[in-house]
Figure (tube, rainbow, N blue to C red):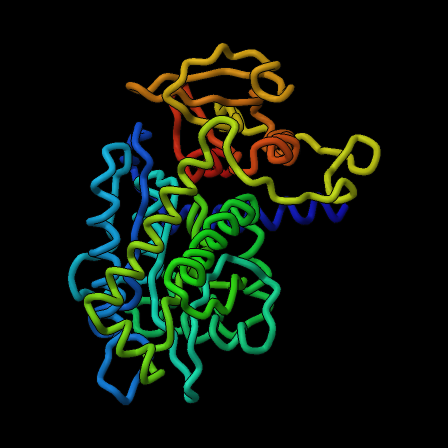
Length: 373
């Protein structure tokens, strides 16, 4: 009964979310690795207030533009910006841009602020488990909604202060959280290791801009602009370049980890994995859609056999120009593919679900919307 209730909640949420991101002409799946860069705030929303004159919206934009410039040097990477100038974007527009592009990653860049001289970097992934401070941060970031015209219509009663809302936000992006943590860890490790800056770690927040994306997503707090020393670093060209480089290196490393036989496996306890003995999987068929699990991509042409892919079943491959993408699984049952994803992640930590319709890859937004049509 609880499983059926959860499924109902998820599909109601999906119906609401896809109503926000309903574009008739979604981009075709790009053969490049698509990264959407989001400079936080902008226009009439300057971001966190400071006494030293630094503006979060300006620093975030400069870091994003530098980050994009560095990423664009890679021929197999495509960069899309939510904004390249000082304009105001509504939160749902930011995630809609990423969904429309069927992006592989969504990276949102911000600066932190505090009444004390706190300092250090933080990288956030979506999550419902918020302590008191994290809930306050989430509320502050989400309250930009109230600057938007027609926010009652666009967010249909979404309450930035509500713990219940926080829990609901976590359900939909659940399948991408592990991949998001992989990227977040790489970013924070680069900040602390390469830049020798204080890392305050990876944290989970119920942030609207992350929850409405259908790909691994992180929000990077690059430091505290209210700290005298750190604020000056963030406001400098040298500081912005170093931050951008650290994030770029993390993204490229993450991308490489998706290739065959590469990657650090996240630990998954056996008793946390669903099995036939301890959990009944109820069918949830989405007609006309085939789900698979992308386990690797590589320039190498490898025979699509189970023994070449650590014993995973139903192996298929697809060639897009000079890149081969390898998949496991083949089903219209969304619950079944989620169960198979957990098995695949034991061998390929960066594995994720993809969808096909009429033999062509479609976005997860479009695939899941089919369940409500």
